[in-house]
Structure formats: C-alpha cells, structure tokens
Length: 133
Image (cartoon, rainbow, N blue to C red):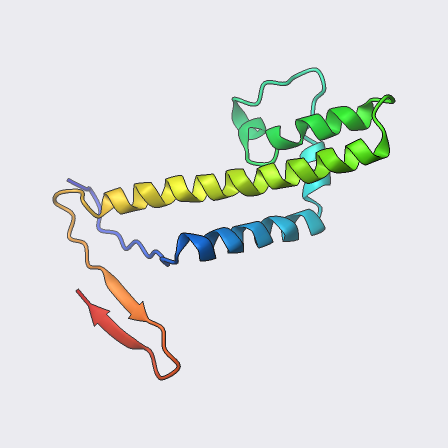
C-alpha cells in the first residue's frame, strides 16, 4: 500500500517517435557543449564507469575518444570517427534507458491496490476529444 496520494502524468508516444526525439535531443546537447562537459569528468587514470557521476550516460561512451585525443599516435580522421561513434553510443544508450523506464512505468499499471485511471487523448485536426477508460 502506498503512503501518499500522488498524480503521475506520462505522455505516451510510440517508440519510434520517442527514439527520434531522443536522438535529436542528443544532437542538440552536443551542439550546446556535451563533449566539453563530459571531458571535464574524464580521468585517463580511471576507467571505472560503474559508480557515481561517471556512470551517467555520455561519460563511458566518450572514453575511447578522449584517450585518442591524448594520444599523439591517433590521426585526426580516426579521432573524428571515434567522436561520431561515441555520439551514436550515447544515442543508443539513451534510447535503451528510455525503453527500460517505459517498461517500469507499464508495470506500475498492474500494481494491485493502486487506483489508476488511464486517460487517452486522441489527436485529430478537429478539437481534441477525450476517451476515458
């Protein structure tokens, strides 16, 4: 039994739409300085990304790129490729995390004892119509 009443709002969209939004969001984050922000957390002496802020999405994915930046033996073309791979890994892991979170949200619907009202809004060109079940 839950201790407090609460209201949980969730905007449900198809996984395709959600993943598209998330990948665009990562691109915007890169434009706004994600690489430099993550660079501040990079420690070449510590490759343990299992704890704390170093576990955050984006930090482990950029490890190979930052190590290549420090290396004099890695050419510019390889560095660019590693950067692109890191950004793609961030996108993939972001989408995986969203999928896992959705699974948890969907399990909440089946928790016994919770009075859950699902509201659906149908999108149309005419005024929004509500269907409550």
